[in-house]
Image (cartoon, rainbow, N blue to C red; front, side, top):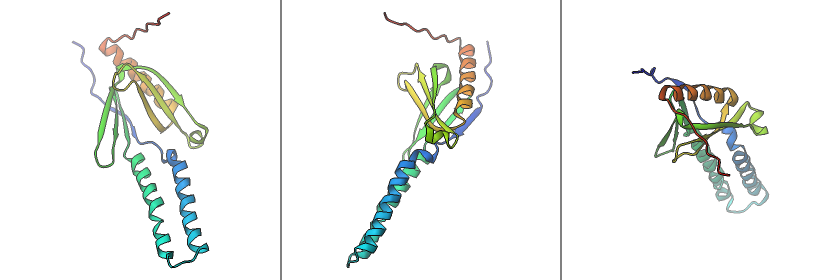
Length: 165
């Protein structure tokens, strides 16, 4: 009987807040428009206009929390993705089920050293897994690939592709 080594944590992190750049920019423009409306259209409703600043602030808070509450964990045996602000949902993907990897590095994420890791799997519930805006995405992909091959060897798993003609 082959003993498997203990599962170890390889990487843990959250998507970068850079994924919210467009939302943050929109909220900033909206807040500036509300402040401009307060100064350019003086009325008795001035304090109520400033109260409208709550909308972009709450929008920013929800977007920030949503991104911050998504946690990726990559261990020597599986990938865990936990999401949720109030309620939590965790999905797991065994590394030996991974079929293919690719990295997507949009220009605006490359500027800050981030990228998306896209994983194609043999798992029915998670056929496509995307780890958004992670640092050093190519090194992370190589690390996942190494451990995927190791887990396949330990479990004796082979992947067959059937291409219909």
